[in-house]
Image 1 (cartoon, rainbow, N blue to C red):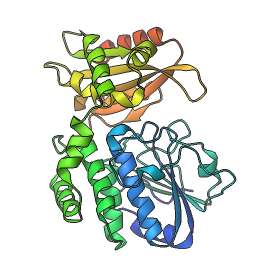
Image 2 (image 1 turned 90 degrees about the horizontal axis):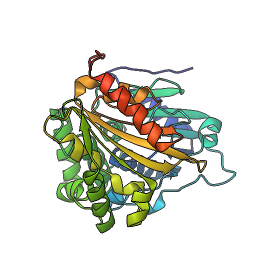
Image 3 (image 1 turned 135 degrees about the vertical axis):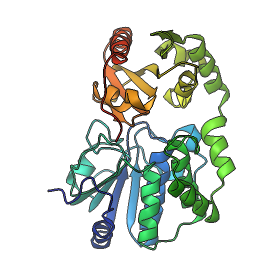
Image 4 (image 1 turned 180 degrees about the horizontal axis):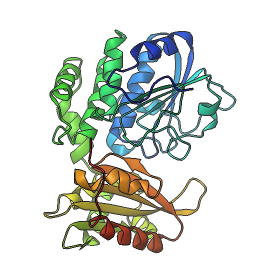
Length: 340
């Protein structure tokens, strides 16, 4: 039975009690983790270890190149240690369902207690303790508040990870979720040793040579419809092979499309292998708030935020792209639930 769902009052005491009565912790996030998954997860892992606990962070997708400057990313495991059962599982920045978590589900399912800490409005209270607050700009903001409430120290490495999370989900403080509280938290994290200029450069500006080549391919293939309101591009498996890189090289490419004048909905389609070796289309979506990227992605079992979301479709890539584009053009003609 869940003891917490949506509320403006965080369940600090419930989480404190969970931490106190357990010794071993399993941490995971969503598939294709970004800065607001990796940074908070590593900060929580470090905080638990400061308390004398044992904690592992598992992400089968590893750490994208843009986040590898963060402290302790070399400790992120691709798979859970075999035969280990954990007292408690923390799922961060994710709804906690098997399709969306970045690890096998057995360590989560077998844990004695499970906790969700997430700010996506599509998440539901499915675990024993659920802190789900869509009013928060980032999961990093929630972990920062938790650490402060529990009076746990934040070292420079933790601060850098939390600032990366804030930066990632606020567009480095350019999106309309950049509240006074977010800026105050960022200021405190810089005081703790975070380097704001490095975070901005590594997350948003620096690209490898091959990822820059892939960006060129993506931009050369971009198309538009609905009088320029819809902008998209599609990268085939061959496009990735031609420059010798993978899905990690498409980070932020969709933002170039969204930045086109007149664009209200932007997407990048990538032909990739799923976890079973079959082909699937991975889709990243960006939109104006009133078009609700999260609800659009939800039509294919995905999720996210009102302005940024993602999903995947198994099967033939070209047919998947066509299906989504048809639906996208219909989407402009429909009314959608406003962002609360």
